[in-house]
Length: 362
Ligand SMILES: C[S@@+](CC[C@H](N)C(=O)[O-])C[C@H]1O[C@@H](n2cnc3c(N)ncnc32)[C@H](O)[C@@H]1O
Image 1 (tube, rainbow, N blue to C red):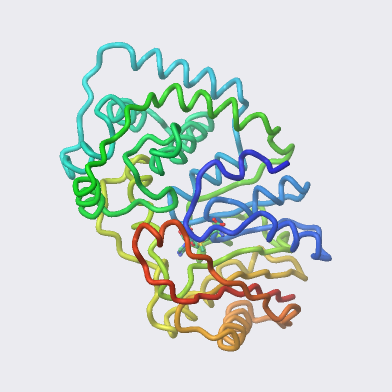
Image 2: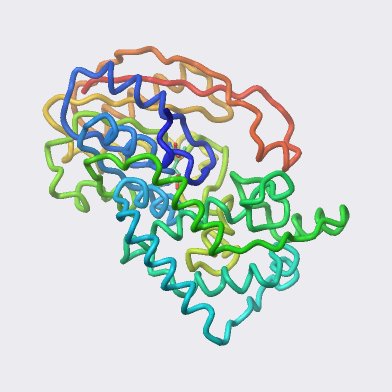
């Protein structure tokens, strides 16, 4: 049966655990598995389930929070006790400051009682320091927005669950269709979710997750120096999305200002030249972690790229970044990027986009 932590919170451009499982089984190595662009943490979590040592990182706080909660979870009893404590404290009279930016968005996104609970939790959850709070925060992130007319477990007015649509767009859409936010009891829903998620036993091993830039992997994971034998990862694709922007409402819940103008960083390169330089620097940042022999499994796609160009670009960026001998083992299984729920909400045109899985031995 599928482990119930896998689906704890969606993330844009996530890959399935079967992808990781297949490549772990095929790998001749048995050292640490590492994912420097871990997103919602599927590589690390699946590796732990398969008994491997694993770790990962991502620059995005939403990704770091979700992955950390899955790969280094608290005990079920600790989360239950913490939620009960927070709920008790919430019942005491307290002043809650409502957002002073995008007020009309928040008014129509959440029922006022639901928003009070969310604002309280947002101010109380110390998710960077406490494992129990990180788990509760992750459960909230997973329920924060979605198709609430179909499921009683989402807190928001109707929204896609993978990405948060922009405030003005959402507002216009809700107003045009007369959609109102549902009244949801956050504490009750989170409590039910703790029961549901912990019906799967967490893996015996845990894995470190850090919120860092891939370029600093070697410095930030000194304990892994020379121990990583399998990188299974999926970097941002060329000209495809901006993760920070796509996750703006979840980032807000974790403490960001709403919809901060975010420099797109490495999320969305438009120039091929800069994109390959980014990947070269990424592999260079990982170099000191690698064992004498290691395997890279890379799922990648993007607009404007043919498969042959991706293959050649990856090979060159690995050679230049690692300064090692690099051999292509698997030529790249190709699959179509499915028309996602997020695109359906955005009304995006269905152009055929492919992604490819390459495997290299270094
Ligand atoms: C294609 S997604 C990974 C999705 C992941 N495989 C999953 O299944 O959820 C690429 C990730 O790279 C992260 N990223 C972008 N620039 C980064 C950087 N400079 N360092 C580390 N992570 C970065 C993004 O935040 C995003 O989560």
